[in-house]
Length: 508
Image (cartoon, rainbow, N blue to C red; front, top):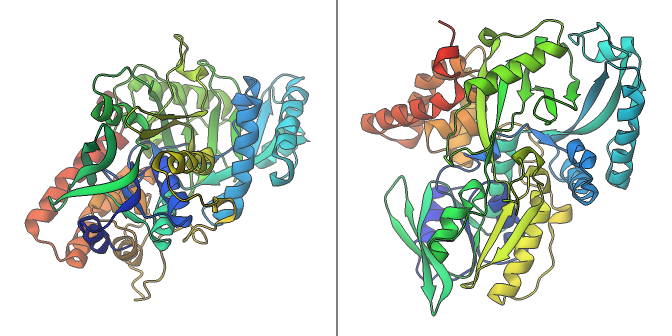
């Protein structure tokens, strides 16, 4: 992906776009892949970096959603399991099968959870992973050596999918470009253009170079996640909120707190959510929480009580209990839940997606989750065809392999032999940084350390240690000057604040 070339396309007044997408998270990028692969002239504009908000801060699972099955949302679970199977096939190296154990601390729990998870397997049909099975106490502890053995009867083993969310987002951006789309990060839509009361385009500004673009299109799609309502107000003025954001946080610990490569699923917690402890890139990821009534912001921060909640619950199930000083990183994301008609708790709100068209023909796709992004995109483009009166063309993404999906790390086409490590505690090299810049539109220090690599998610101290070295490489590669480097340093520190423990919890 060459950002300079894409910006040149966006600034060309002769370009007449079929589909203009606002938002470069999972939903927007999925729509861009779908529309571009059908042959529509497609442009996507993202105000920050691809997946910078919610879409890079997930639990890293592609799954059907066991808790939705418990809530009776069989249709949503079936759809999610179908999409899980497609992603395992279409994004190898980025989405992989992962075994989970549900520990049983009551005699009947193996059979209770086993029956539910067998139904889970059946709903997946021929797109299932592997079958659910029962484990004895010794078999359970062999899978998860650090699991508390006292009172353990055994466990239920089942399978789901795991992925690297930000890397998958980059693969989707590259795929959209490969099919002729123009996707740009750090380009903010400032205004919707209307003619005769109908949305016919956007005015946007490059947040890096300052250039303003005026794009005309047959249909505009609002796919901005938790920022959905701000775009709706550009269109309709003071409309009521559609989104009820909910914050979920995760903490990152050393993998010794699992002791193996199998994840734990705790099906019942104090706030009614499912808790996951999963192996991820040599660490253990623990999450998540559910905190409602939170402000919409690009970089939300974990709350002290959320961190305490996760540490407390981990201590109930792990033999070696983690403490605050064991936390390597922490991150918070906002779920773009569609607001229910009643005062329902956010933990009970469905993750089904919601598609609407305003009186001025702005298409809005809201809600949903990572696992179902492809189906959401198909639905959105099908509606956009109607709204924009586009030539009808079939969806091709059911079997479309994502470009870069064969790799789970930044593009390896840079063959300069430069394997200087970013940091001894991080699995990245100088060639990874160069690839992120040359091939993947990594134009800011945070783009590279947070999303092209996952350094910030794995170990904030190591990421901070490496930041000056990486900044030096970027300054040289991008041919920038000292003032640019200083601005990057300041922006990086601001984003870093959202990955560290709340001040009163930080070890001295």
